Image (cartoon, rainbow, N blue to C red):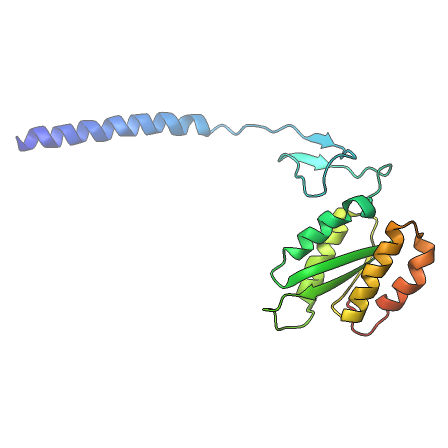
Length: 174
C-alpha cells in the first residue's frame, strides 16, 4: 500500500514536470515588437498612452492648445496629494502655475512639488521652457484672471508683462 502511494506521487510529480516544462519551453523565445512611429493627432488627449515599443514624434504643426486642453493638465496636477486646485496660464515659452494646497497639507512649496508640476506641464507642451510655480493666494487669483483674459482672446504679448511680474516674485519657484 505504501509503495503504491509513493509510486502514484512519483508519477504525478513526473507528469507535472513534463507539463510545466512544455509550458516554459514556449516562453523562452522572445518575441520582437516592431518599432512604430506614431504621430499624435489633434484628437489625442494628453493623458493617452502609446503602445509599448512605439515612439512619439512631436508634431510641430499641432501645438498644444492650452485653452482646449489646459484643464486636463490642471486635472493631473490636482491629483497630487498636496494640491487641491491649480491654474495654468502660458505666455510664449513660459508657463505660470498657481496652486492651492489641501487643508491637510501643512507644508510649503517644495522643490519636489515644483518638479512634479513642471514635469506635467512640460510633458503636455514641449514648447514650454520655463515653468514657474507659486502657492501665493494673490498670485493664484491673478493667474486665474490672466487665464480668463487669454481665453477671451488676449495675446501672449498682452499678458506677458503680468506673467513676468509673477515669475519674478521672490516666492515663486522657477
